[in-house]
Image (cartoon, rainbow, N blue to C red; front, side):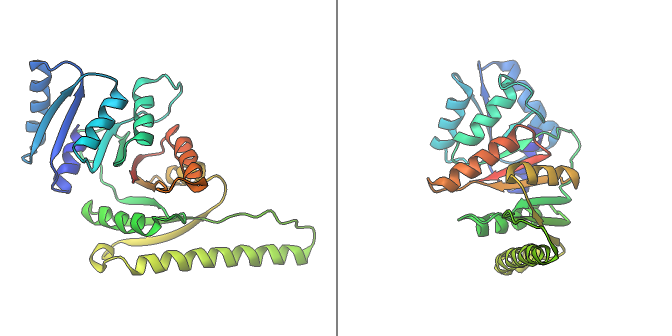
Length: 257
């Protein structure tokens, strides 16, 4: 809830605090206490709903045209029956709005100095990268790493010549991906890029695992992913990547839709 107050403050947004359960004065008092202690002075509304958490929250987001759903999540789902983890996972897949999964709970603000963003080629790559710069600027981040997927076609290497061919092919793919990303960066407003270090990083392997592993290794403060909008094979692939990623969150994750 504290992280939700921070984001509402950062983006000057209305905050809905939705509780699935009975409307009790003790709960309202607790929510008010958190709001007051944080010092949030924006527009806030407490909502109490009954029913299945996933269906109820999904319906609420649709009816109120919510832009961002903020959820607490466990870092590792050891069991699919783990309530908090499974609810966060199902909601992430079902709601139409963007989702922010918080695992780094703290009363003190945790700065988002380093943001890792999914730069894989999808129909919304440009929107995702542009939004990542906007988020980075708003959160006063210092560094963005855009992760590219370098497809690793299996090439038989059995002598110096085939090794050279494989190396040249790899370098060509990296160069092509870098050009694609740089063209997108060029379209981002200058103010969003100002004073932010930008790094391009190619990865291999299953993207959901690889980008999550990379974010963990570099100790990123925030990982930004997207989902494919079209109903096609690409969407299924991205959805599988997200399911893999959500089973073991490397850090706080913002999923753009």
